[in-house]
Length: 331
Picture 1: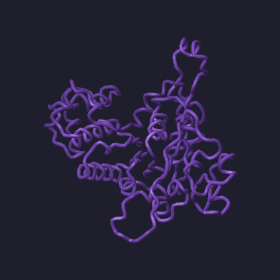
Picture 2 (picture 1 turned 30 degrees about the horizontal axis):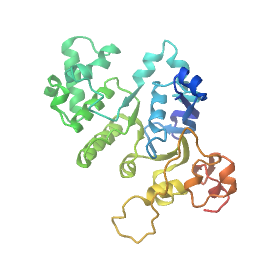
Picture 3 (picture 1 turned 90 degrees about the vertical axis):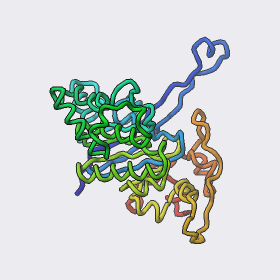
Picture 4 (picture 1 turned 135 degrees about the vertical axis):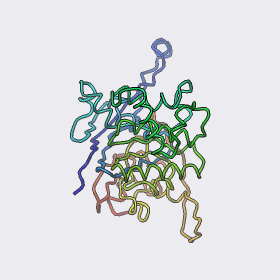
C-alpha cells in the first residue's frame, strides 16, 4: 500500500477584488470577492506525480501557492506527512517544513535574481538552512547540484542573462533541490520553453524523481506534457476539481464533459477518424459564476438539475468526479 505524503481536504481561497473604499461609497458598490479555489480535495502518494490541468484562471497556481505556504487557506486543510501545514507554518517548525517542500516557478526569466551569480542563487537555501558551512564546501555542493541537472560546475560563476530559458529552468531546479526536499510543486515549469527544451527539462525531472524518490505536484495546461510525467491527473474548472483519475483511465475513458472537451481539442495526428468536438464557449466571469454546476453554460448534457444544484465529488469506479450527468448515467 502506498502512503500519502500530501492530503488536501476541502481547500478554498477567496481574494477580495473590491474597488477602493471611497469609490465604493460614491458609486454605491458592494465589496467583491473571487473564489480562486473552492473546495478542492486530493491526495498524492509518496514518489508519485499528480498533475493539475485546466484553462488559464481555473486556480491551479493558487493551489500550488497554498500548498507551499505562500498563501493561507480561507477554508480547508493541507496535511504534509500527517502534519497540518497551516499550524506548522505558524510555528517554529516552519523552517524545517519549508526545507522538505520546494517550488519551481513558471517563468525562469523572472524567478532568478539577475544581479546574483548562479553560485549565490543556488547557495541561498544552503546558507538559509545552514546545510553547508564554509565557502569551499558551498561551492563544491553547488557544483554537484548543477551537474545533477545537466549543467557544468563552472557555470556557477556566470549570471542568469548568460543562459538560455531551458538552462535557467535547470538552475531553478538545482536551487529547489538544494535542501534535499521530498515534495516539489512545479507550476508550469516548461510552459515558457521551446518544445525540444521542454523534453530535456521533463526528462531531467523524471530522472531526479526516480533517483531521489521525489513526490511532484505538476501544474500544466499542456496535456501532452501531463501524459508524459503524471501518474494521476486532476482536471480543474473555475476553482473546483471536476475529475481526478489515473492517467491511463483519464486519457482512454474521460468521463466529465469538460475533460472530454479538453482531450478533443488535441490535434489527432494519427488521423484515427475519431469524432472530435472543439471546446465551446468561454470560461464564465469568476466574480459572478453560474449557479449549480459552473460548467453547465458550456455543457451539451446539462439539464435543470445541473443549472440549479452544485454537483459533489463522488467516487465512481475508482475515479473521483463531480458531474450530475455521469452520476445519473446520462453519459
